[in-house]
Amino acid sequence: MNRVKQSGMTLIELMLACAMGTVLLMVLSSVFANGLSTSSRISQQLSFDSHFHELNQFIRDDLRRAGFAIEGARAGAVKWEDSPQTVFVNAAWDCLAYAYEFTDGGTDKVRYSSLYLDENSELILYTKEQNTTELPKNIANACSGGEVISVSSEIQLTSFVVDTSLFPAITIAMSAKSQVNGSEDSSQLNVTVVN
Image (cartoon, rainbow, N blue to C red; front, side, top):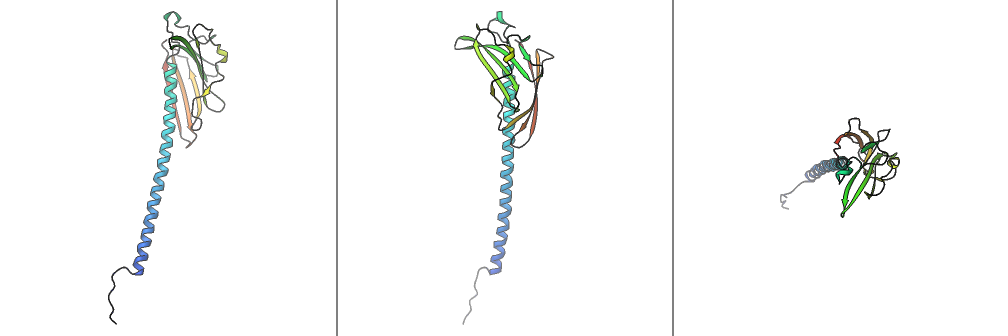
């Protein structure tokens, strides 16, 4: 019988190629999994940073309006009742209350606002809007009620301290911790009330 030389791979060559392919697939899978993990971690950090920055920006922008009066005759008088200044801070330095006027559909109104940290480390915003002709809100009610404005599933505020010793310059120091990945951030807002 004539033997014809066969071309192709031997069994050993085939087994070596499969083993090398398997190792290569395992390495690529590991690199892909690590990339996904890193991407997820970066996404969580960006979300935390974004929410914390937006919270800071909201506080800064709203607080700048403190004491604003639509008519010059009421300048300096737009504040919570029994508050000595346009911006009130409680004795614990963790509740900030202020008021300002605005126009809503042609009607002059006053917005009474307060910011404070509750027992669950969430930042609470209390707002009450009323006509400028109504009696002002009493400052005794400033640090209760309201809605959570920090995203509690992502941000846990660890501190919220307000300093008005250099009024009209106000300093707010905040620290926060991510509920998702444990990272921490802090900020200091310096706002000057000019109204």
